[in-house]
Length: 119
Image (cartoon, helix red, strand yellow):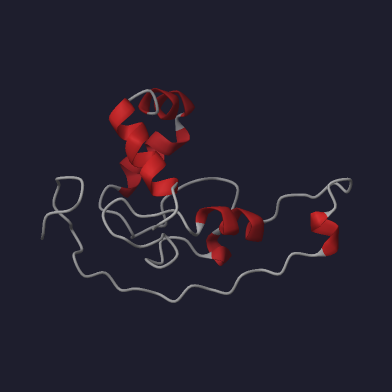
């Protein structure tokens, strides 16, 4: 383990890096603001694929944390990918805990850093 940017220790200092999938072409119908456009799995994937991991200068897609084939509307940890999988899933399912966590200014700062674009 090595020190991470957040002051903690990295559990995986040398992760496997996966190739990013291609960008989805945007259709004329999707660009037309007058036409209702339902949200599909690919659109969700496009929104979360570039979220940065707080411990690595890599995106969730590059770390293979998110895959389009696994995108559903419920948020949960993919089985076998996290040591505290059950506890994290329980927290993600509890809307009050999520709201309370986002009141923590340090945690909110980490979340915002993960969502900001890499330089």
